[in-house]
Image 1 (cartoon, rainbow, N blue to C red):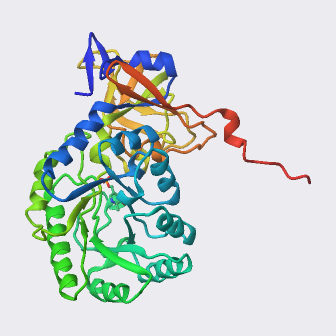
Image 2 (cartoon, helix red, strand yellow; image 1 turned 60 degrees about the vertical axis):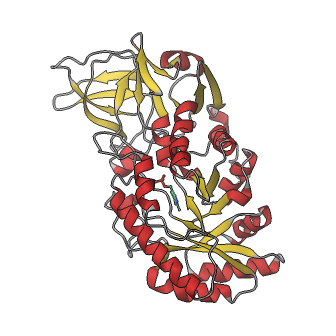
Image 3 (cartoon, rainbow, N blue to C red; image 1 turned 90 degrees about the vertical axis):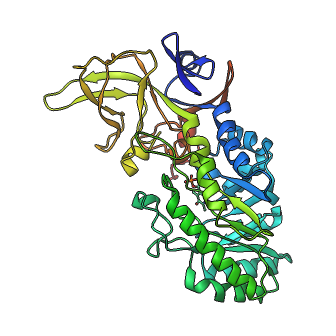
Length: 416
Ligand SMILES: *Cc1c(COP(=O)(O)O)cnc(C)c1O
């Protein structure tokens, strides 16, 4: 376990979290190198012996230390912006092992990606195909492309993180795919290299992933029958993690079930997981500022807030909250909502938790390694918080806390 109690203190690997709070302040994100390596290793083991590539989804955690660690393990990357491409390259990642997804790529992002030698642009509309062809022709290059096909499978996850249904903005319709592949194959400035899908996030049941795999493989065969060779098939990310009481299956079992549906031996298989690699490898470390008992509700006011970890207010997501100093919450311990200082009623990190806490105590919001820091904002003029990567007995500061001055450094008052 990357995060476990030792001598009564919650530790990240071998480092007690109170030591990190003293050295780097709170709130801060704390990641475990070993946990990231272990999760990546589960994918690598499941895919061993196959022509395959794991493209880590950068939007789940884009800290350079995380990206560099994964690049060293041999990961490729899945990006959704030119900014993420720059991060991958700055971290020593390889553009030739990087996929560019997303519905709204700009002309400059497309040019930047082609010039960097991107593995593939995952296209999500016909208009985007025409734009990519025009940009590639203008810069005198051929653009490697795949279509992200919407397999119309219900991922049965939160509607905000379900992406594979017809009503979602993502992907091209299954029934349009063959026509789009023919069109792409006719354009000299584009090179068709693959096909992909991604049906949603935090999927704890293998069935929708297996169903989507079957549909994409069947479609890939039809495209190849039309004489268009597909060098890779990208089955997306989306495997869920345990936040609370979800019954999750091991990564290896889910990937294994998906692989059973892939009988295209020639094609390279790509997966683009994010959450399942970093989600349980990070915690948000925060300090209790005040206890605020009330007539109908008790509050613990902490120094972290919705701008630091948006998932609870955005998706009503549940994160386990553990005291850093081990304490048995007595049976009659008061129940608290854990809230931050931001001026919104939705600034709640956790609801109705039995805790025995006092002002000054440290709490760890668990499973915060994915879609935590990357979704954070400066709302209420709060500097973005520090990030720390623990490696055995060492804690490395991998992103300094933003300064107050940096919050308005780009602003100016007109000379009225
Ligand atoms: C966000 C995203 C992923 C990663 O999803 P997880 O649920 O974090 O594994 C993979 N592929 C695409 C195209 C994405 O947009």
